Amino acid sequence: MHLSNYLFFTTHCEPALQFYADCGLGAVVSTLRHGDNGMPVRAESMRGKIMHAQFEGPGVRFFASDNDDAEPMRGSAMIFVLDDRAQTQLLFTRLAVGGQVTTPLDVQPWGDYYGKLTDRFGVQWMFNCAS
Image (cartoon, rainbow, N blue to C red; front, side):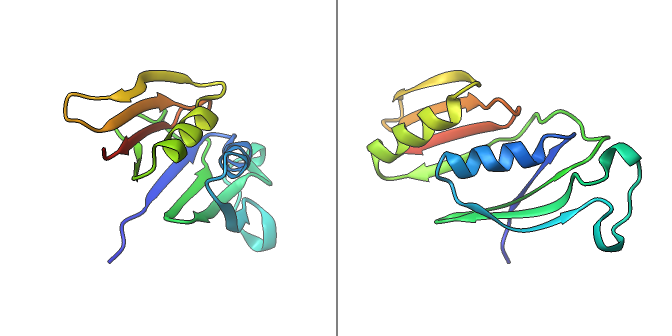
């Protein structure tokens, strides 16, 4: 069994995935688009938007799509569990561009280097680097 997260965007899936690739998280490995090759189109405004994408990188795999009825992301976060402070800082800084840092990276009461942010696409990210 493997548990993966699935991110739903309304119409910004493609730029979000490109941003994550630019941040160094990995790359899109497969994509299906609304309306391509017989794929259904529920609303014409969704034609050409991402119906399903798979994103992978070292230690990273998640799925994403555009859905015009998607609810804003809330109540969950993507979490990186790392063992290198420099890598933690680098990824945190990259994903924070245009977003909002809700917990600055710092050593927390439990002893780990931890921070949390919401990126410019509304996805929450947590970073925990064991000391």
